[in-house]
Image (cartoon, rainbow, N blue to C red; front, side, top):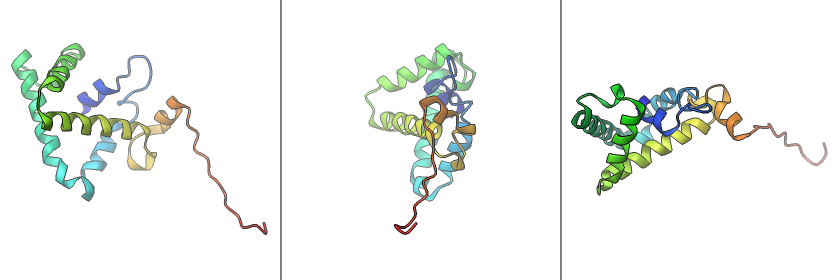
Length: 131
């Protein structure tokens, strides 16, 4: 999952998945009850991506170069397979969520995602009309 997230949000020109601590966020998400029904799908998608890399380069996805990983991801995306498309959407959504979430969920380490987009979290104090 780490390598895939790093290809979705690479650290080429700026901060990316690695600096945002995406794996900690993903670990948190997969332990949540609302995600339980998708864990097997996520594992199957990662295994299928590995099988593509193994077929093309005789090594798992994580051991491929960035360019090879991009080819493997494109190959997966170009398949006419709804489960493959759901897997990619899920991983892209988790990556973006982990990059921009409240750091209390494990992602957005040191608020790098918020800094990247110029978001400034402000605490709003609500008081009654009398003061």
